[in-house]
Length: 155
Image 1 (tube, rainbow, N blue to C red):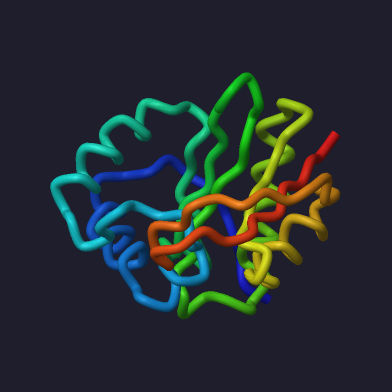
Image 2: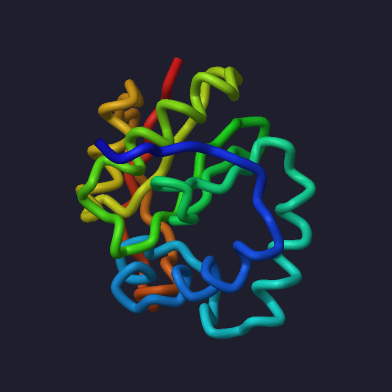
């Protein structure tokens, strides 16, 4: 069985993460992304800010970097976010990483959001105990349109 682990984000993770986060299919599924996923300067500026977050981790599969997971506070609500390399989708990595993360970061309630048609991400959140509490329509940069987003909560 594959070993999924969390560790600190390292400088060496940034180049592959930039590539993961500009993969066209990944960007389409995530929907709520940077305006221009190919803008490396904007990515670097954003990552410099995010790396000060103590609740941000690299996800590894058998020691190989495959994504990130973190929480952040927005409007007094703790939210979860993660990004998994597309080549690693469908292998249970996001679910295992989320389980590890939730054992470490115990802020509750915690909220998750996903495009309502991103069934894989919704499944990951629900397997971890997040329950749908509503939907909203929001502008998705990756799709250039307003789309429905499902909001979930873990108590």
